[in-house]
Length: 362
Image (tube, rainbow, N blue to C red; front, side, top):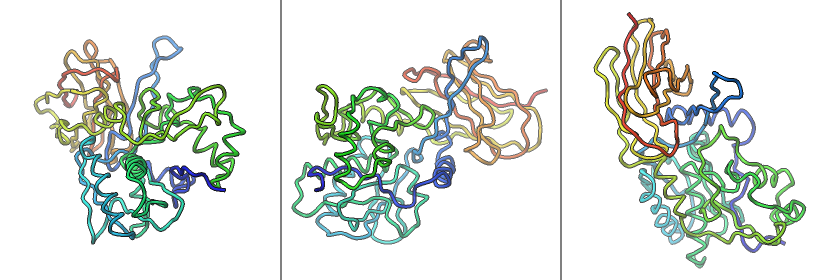
């Protein structure tokens, strides 16, 4: 017997295996350089700083994503479109629903009993005629709350969000009764490996942005009390939580500037990390091989990461505080090509002003 309350499926076609994951990382880095982020970590060795590399799958901030229905009844399509557009008031993205041409997000209703979505830019790794999102049980007479629950959840995936119970901060927070969980999801056709991968396994610290564990998130599954040890349960979330809204506004801030050009040897550029978690991205071109000095200046504790050459997904090097005060400073011999700089605050929740510049070493 299948579960009465259905959930987001683990079966996403064409996105399994190390090769697919590597392709997804490459596509994400081309879409947005700050999908590859460096975060300084404390080290057990005095005087030595470690770092974690976060690999995200966010779309370019401010992007217009084309959404195309591959099939389905017009009345169902209309309800999905109306609810999906709610994300436009949360994230600095636009959803343009098209009936012809290519679609970045392609929606199908053909795979019955399964609803799923690719995560963020993984949609770009799927064949252009194949679905990147599926709604397997939405019908014209489906209750509105069910539409809201499922569509808000799947479009959360499409914009780069993961399941909340797989948030790194969820480790140890849910007292699962594992034998009962395996039996419960077996009713929906999941194998033990499916449950391990989609329920118990949390993402690593270096693979995703995350906040504290939020059981009220639209990205959280319902957790029946019968599947946990003691008394612990999470209901069916149908609304965006306040943490969902704050988190996605940090990932897609409405006041973020477009990619800013730097000129080697030119004037310094003033910038502002105005919201918690913000990352600023700059671009510059090196015309001849030489040692270059890249610095931030100002009162803000910055972390500077250099990407390139000609590949925004490649991290050349990074620095935390080798500059004046709390500023960053990178000295590196660079060959000709395009480079990108990303600047973030060392403290994720903090904000501040700074200037950034690039010059050749004398």
